[in-house]
Amino acid sequence: MIVEFRYSQEPGSDTSVVTGWLKNVGDVVSHGEPLIEVENNKVTVVVESPYTGTIVDVEAEVGDEITDGDVLAVFETKETS
Image 1 (cartoon, helix red, strand yellow):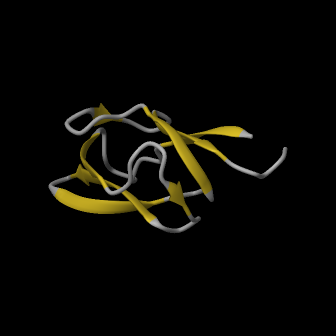
Image 2: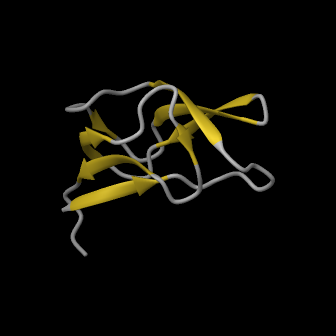
């Protein structure tokens, strides 16, 4: 199943900036594994993967400003809806 990983903004932040990806397209990741680093309010936060599966696309590149609901990446999972 193809699923989109959407950003969940921290309360009190208007925007965040992608500062680094810890995984690449094609990598298999597990739920809870560190995936992406974002900066908001001058603090860098590591966001964990919400899925177990393969990263098939990265929508947010390093340096991009992101807000609540933006698609960060697309996963292929074995889960069914």
